[in-house]
Image (cartoon, rainbow, N blue to C red; front, side, top):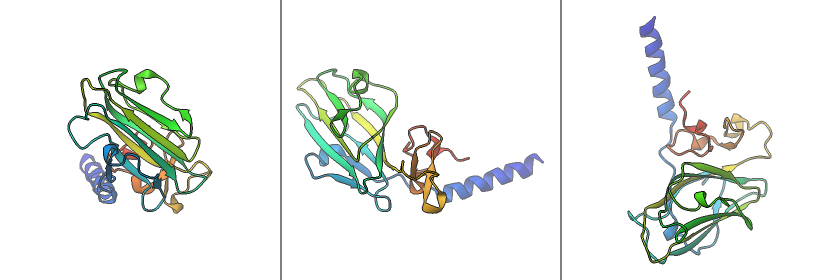
Length: 191
């Protein structure tokens, strides 16, 4: 019996891994500064991986603003800061705005080495502002961003959607891509 259940588990694992997509496209905030809005849409760009810089450390006296928005007025954005390494507090900081409202009001979510935290926007637009002074540089942050479909009541799989355990509704394309787009890790669990 043990052997059959092991084989079945192995087959399910292989099938799930075959369905898995490679990690979402990686973007670097320092390459996107002051551009027009980065637009998320359900088919082409339902989610991304965002890092502050492709370098091992960010530069001193760095000031960067990147604006994101959804393609449809009914969509929202989920932002999960997975890794934060911004050590020169409060001289260096990351601020995340939902429209004009500051989401990460807690200073521990603006700099330092906070554990993972997640925000869901209430508007269609999110801005991320990073500022550093002339002192110590660190590696910055890594985030997962995804479209959220709050207006779709049941989050049907038939529409290519995935229901997270925390009730967020994201594109099925983002499952098992190595990034926590749900904000609770359920899109990365195999079973």
